[in-house]
Image 1 (tube, rainbow, N blue to C red):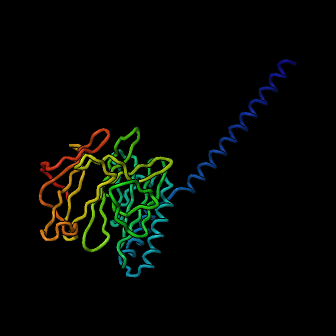
Image 2 (image 1 turned 90 degrees about the vertical axis):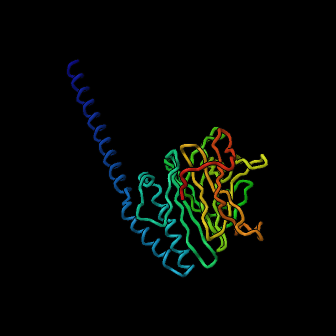
Image 3 (image 1 turned 45 degrees about the vertical axis):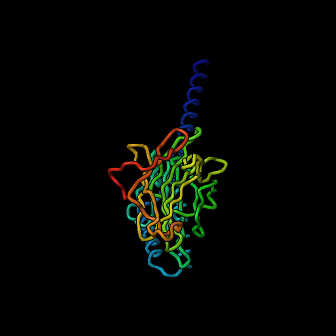
Length: 287
């Protein structure tokens, strides 16, 4: 009788285990199906974006451009939820700025397009954890060098370098960018992107000035017909930039006439600030 009971127990145990394994198999298959359904064809999405950017470049209708811009933003936002988007190159999208931060944990997409009222800028910031932040600029504005700017009031710029920087127990990103609000002058910008949970914003008071105070960002305006060098020298941990001076003596205070005087300044990376150093020696200049 005892052996019979043990036999029944073994049979019941095997039945339970079989049902359990079958259940787990069904769950696994369901997960595979869902994952396959959620896969994205990034090559096709890139082709679609290329078509939209082509229309954005070629159209002369501001209203149509705004519609195309919305489609571009929505498509980038939609595909940003897929982990593979973070590492996808988008090499054919020549009108899309796509850079990685120096720590490899952040990626910035920025783009602009001309209208009859000046340039309009847009952007999307992605982290390697799957989070994203939107950047919109309905009208490009001139940022000042004081105070923080929340992401909803972004001034608009194309960023081409992002430097990870430890400051006050967190990682912030020092951005180098370009903007233009009118035909007379261009603008180069050094800013800080602070992605804290409560208030993501631009600006941090660690850029040293001549008088010993600290700016939240640096803004350089110069003649639209010339160039200004602004780049990160990773080997020497410094941001190098042209020293700007008036090119016309009779309009000394008009920044639209400023240009390089062939000397260079730099911001030297330090633990709690970027220290200003003037008249440095530079061998290799990035344009």
